[in-house]
Image 1 (cartoon, rainbow, N blue to C red):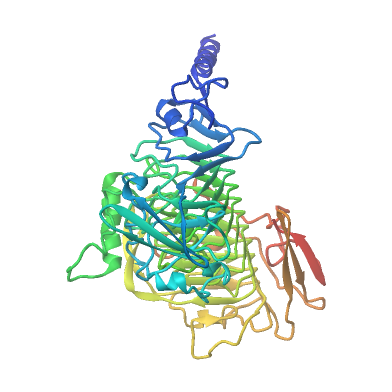
Image 2 (cartoon, one colour):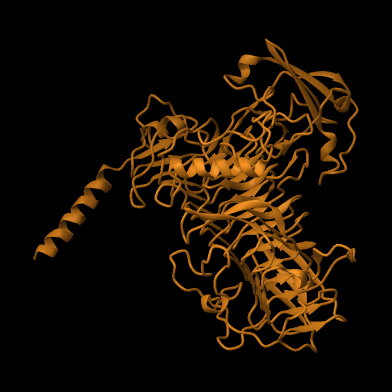
Length: 636
């Protein structure tokens, strides 16, 4: 009887909570003096964000909202979130830009506009340069970006390169790179020159990015937010170094348990989404530490790590975000980045492309996804392609991380790069079709059931001591260099496609011959090698056919992607085994098993498409029983 009364009490509390929760409506035709109902909506999202309480919903209706939303508070738990959502079936644009009008023609193609500095409010993006640790700005890029009909122009370092624009050969869009701009700021005015080619900026839409961000709480403690269904673009975001506050167009700050889903995110000066570090534990500590005798970025990041731990970095306080089913493109630094704050998060079902496509900013923090300390994070089912950068870059403290069932192609540098990690991390059932599939300057990785078209880079790093952690924790267990090895490769297919490799380069190879000189033991079995790909010297149970040169094509049909792959019709399969926690063992340095984030054992018993694998002799590669001859599969 007491149990029944308790259950009734819980139901009553939930009903009261549901009744007290509010839905606020926002419309471009509304007024912030209204009451926020469907019939009397507010005009700005940020006004509603100051009122929303745990359990409330902010529904935004179609239109363009040029504002920074700075939520005043978060939810309390998963059942009492604050939800920001675009109204069903309506297109809601949140922009970090303003329309720029009043252009005067200077000569054919070249126009000029002068606006008072007050036009920019309290932040002049034409005055603030892109800068930060591990950033190379090439001496010209401001956080501002200029757009013609939604397309970003190329900033130049002097007016002559605007008046006499030529294609920029290092970018993806040669014709687009002839649309250029330049700015000057004095005490009173900002002047902008732009080469619009044959367009008339007084007839077409010209916008300039002005706000540092679009959706970002400027303080910690804003947890359990959901942000869904919006189009977010054109913010003047700053470089997101791991040693600095990381602010993208959508940014979690130092918070936990956000859901960012079903959005279209594009045209950020630097990053689209950041799950990043906050400011008080360091703000570009390396580049600002002028005159320090120990001028080493490695040491500076270790110092930041311990500051962050003292500040409360733990699973209880930070991370555990879900970022899913977003389309992210045309961001110049990263599609998604995060230092520390991406820990325990799930990144799923996102389409990330055209990152770093303009190639106007350089540095060591660039990629479709760039994470530091993605502890126990899961990166699954994403499509990451056509980036003039790394597809994914996992840098420092990649421990307990799983990268599974992702589709990579046409990435300029590498599909996946691991830098100075001690593991364990698991890379399974991925399709890696770029010219370099995997780069690992790490140890303690497991690579299983992948399809790898191109090269593999494997090398040590004896010059940096980097952290490893207690299992499933942010607590640091120690620091160590990277000797190389302690990796596992089971049941992969190496296509061996690409150009000849300089034989003097012992770190860059097709297949696993680069592990012949690894310092730590490696466990390698059940792989298939074609064309140029070579096995590890001590490998058993493998198949190699140097005479077979596979062919593949990626076909994009609407929202879907198909892979056509030729297979060796006369080939044989190696002896394989089901991949489990027991088989993979423990990473040597952290002494942690390859297991699920909750500590339970795992087994790779499904393929890329979700099909059940054979328990006794699973197929090599990401597809179970894919068949022979030419195979065409829907992979997205």
